[in-house]
Length: 263
Image (cartoon, rainbow, N blue to C red; front, side, top):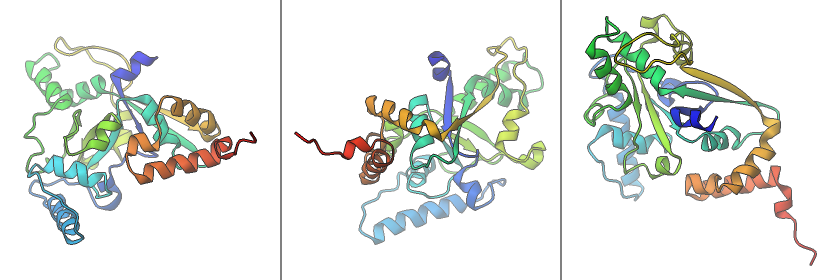
């Protein structure tokens, strides 16, 4: 079971929407400058309140940092670690709900994307498209946002220390759902084939996505075990908000932490 997690990317979120999708429509046209304008405003706003901030000039690097402070972006946060994903599935929740853990198989997703961009499953271009999906070159998001595109971004930039602490990975998504006759990203995953023959790509009949519903009545056991692994808000967030998360979680689900010794 553990080996499977190294092959997939778990995501904790109630639905598969980028923060940009939650606020504005997805970029479907080349030359769309909305993200660039938001990054400019983020930079100017920090300078106005006295926070040193230097733009890197690389859109993805600037977008990663802004995204982790709440600026909408066409990115979904993932983690290579199922344990870190579990923490975010249970952090800041109460026992009267459920969390959803999405597990994505990179190989299957990359194969599907390659197939969409090639006519012949045995054509050499299929392998090239697959490699571009799973490990895109640095120029992909350097100065603009490609439209109708899906990409795994496996390596966070040096300007995203929180992503490194969280073993983070981004999924870039500007898919045109209407063009593909699906309502959202989850339906796009669900409609993909579980395997197809190809001499140039690995063949496995496993689903692209697994959706696991986790009841919140497990929260006490999960958080206490993760704490033993040093996985908590403080170690993952590296700021005061993360420490406050630890206190809330301990107070609600590990009350003995607050009891004074009678000795």
